Image (cartoon, rainbow, N blue to C red):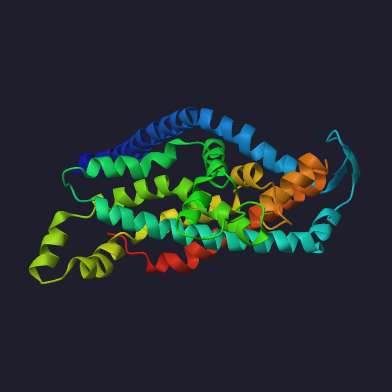
Length: 319
C-alpha cells in the first residue's frame, strides 16, 4: 500500500508535465507558422501601400511644413504658415462652397436615378438584359472620354442640347461659359458618368433580396410602390449606405471633367478644392501650399466619412 502511495505522486507529476508541455507546443507552433505565412502573403500588398500610399502621405505632410522652389525642392521651413494661409484665404472658402454645392447636385441625383432604374429593371423579364447593359455603359468610359463627349453636346452652336432647345422654341444656353450654368453642366455630366457604377451596385443589392419577400408582401395585399418603400428599401439600406459614402468621396475628388470642360471657370464658378490644389501645386509650383491643401482635403473627407458611419449607419438594417 505504501509503495502504491509512493508511486501516485510521481505518476501525477509526469501527467501534469505531459498536459502542460505538449498542448502548449501543439498550439503555439501552428499559430506562429500561420502568422508568418499570413505576413508572407501580405508582403506584396504592404509594399504597394508603402510605396504608393504611406510614403506619399508622409512626404505630403513634410512638404506642407516647408516652402519649395519651382522645381519642388525644399527651400525653407515655414511650420504651419501654409495652413494659416489656406484658412485665411477667401478662395479656399469659395472653393469649399463650390465643392459642397457640386456634391449636393451630383450625389443625391445619381443615387435616386440609379435606384429608380434598378427598381425598374431588376425583374427577370424578357428584354431587361438589354436595358441593364445600356444603363451600365457609362462605367466603361474614362473621365476624359466622357468629358469630350459632353463637351460636344454642350457646344453653343452645334451641340445637341442647344439644338433640342431650339426645336421646342427656347433660347440656346451657354452651358460652359455662363457662370450660372457651368457648375450645373459639369454636374449633369458627372451624374451621367457615375450612373453606371451606382446602377450596377444597387441592381446587385436588389437582386439579393429574396423572392419570398415579394411573394409574402403580395399575399398581404401590399402594392409594388408600398412594398419597395417599406420593405425592399430598408433591406437595401446597406447598399445605399455604401454608394453614398463612395459617391461623396468621389465628388470631393472630382477633377478630370472640370479640367477638361471648364478649367475652374468661368469666374471660378467650377473651381472645386481639387482644382485649386492642382493650380497651386502644378501651375504656380507652390508645392508646400498644395500639400497643405491636400491634407486639408483629406481631413474634410475623413470627417464626412466618420460622421456618416457614426450617424447614418444606425439607420442601416443589416440582414
